[in-house]
Length: 192
Length: 355
Image (cartoon, rainbow over all chains, first blue to last red; front, side):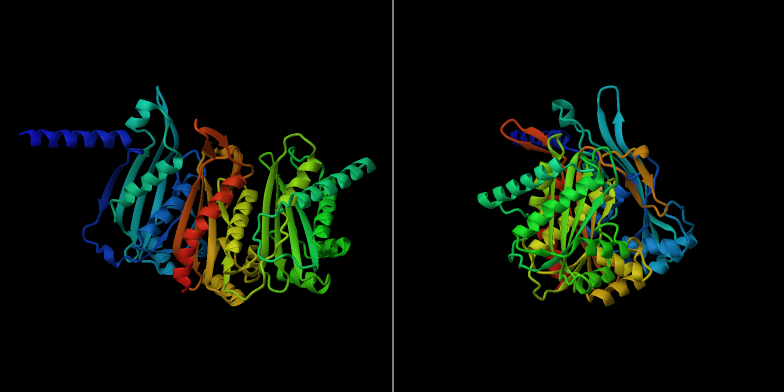
């Protein structure tokens, strides 16, 4: 009886500790096609991320973290950004252009990639509420396969720099880099 | 117009500063100290970068004249002969070398054949964020190999700018060159910056070069020459396709290229910035030091694949002492720390890939 009570206390304390120490609170929703064998995807390219925020570099900032995190998984080969931009230019596309499935197929073929990643940065910056301010990043990620151009994975992640610990003891929001990295990790966590 | 009294004052200050550094035994250069610079002829090229801005302590001609005076004293103290200044400037004009980042093989051939100098010493001076920044590149005129890099900065705090100039040049001056031993070639492409001005991006490239040179295991071609080789093949390094990559392999005989990228994660408002047509973006000026991430990517030029990457985050502030007092850090300080910390870890990827 005593040991059961102890176990409950341990679980409660662990949950409390996690709530207190959690830095950036990530929330990611995802869509994953279940009729696709992802093990066939080895070589990927990353299309320049779209930016819907006031910070005109937000897309490039998040994309920089995304490339690093993808490579750190060690699961995929990533085509160099210069090669991607050369292909975009060659196929008369533009970095801020929404691609049709046929354009996705053509681009992937030109890059010899098995799939293309896309990203849209929807929020990047400081969100002010009545009491305090915190950094917020929201990004929509997408993976389109090369053969049909269709979306096989999609994830929307929202992260902020607030935590219970910070709210209780102060210290401000986690930095934009930390929040953006947590966002990328939350999204990729639904894929790998 | 410079007054004679100013000239005398500058000469005295230069002499005193140099004497001070010799007497106190201070090594003036942060660059790799492998071999003492031999008494040889050097061509010296000076560029003032960033254009006339209100922060400039003096007008361009005056700053240039003063810098040449200090450089003459520094090279003299190192026992190095310097090519005739008018001949060098004529060569620079003919080859349209506008910045230290626009060197060409033809210009280096001119340095070697017309000026008879085996080494080019290029100095770029800029004022950014209230700091006077000096960066030196010593380049072997025969191979384009970087032999030394020196970068230093000093705050323009309203005191005598002559004194600040002497101090910053003395600290950045590379009085030691990496010996030209055979080593595997490695390309470091000009860095890419996000949320930073081009001068800051250049400083990031210099810091990476410095870290790689200190390693001493690679023959590193000057990034400006890599740029020139891509341009000669009709390609842009920012959009390097298979033909461009092949051209670089042919020219430099190595399939390995490092792409430095530095990202400032602070909020970048639109009015300070401009968007370039191909989706690249840059800012004109940087503000206070903010959180930076320096990333090095190793690209296999044969396939166009990024084979490895490492990042380092440098905070804009540093805590110190028992009470955690914070001090703002300069951008160059952040970049130097990032490059130094990042290189050993990145080098492991490089070794794995090249072995």
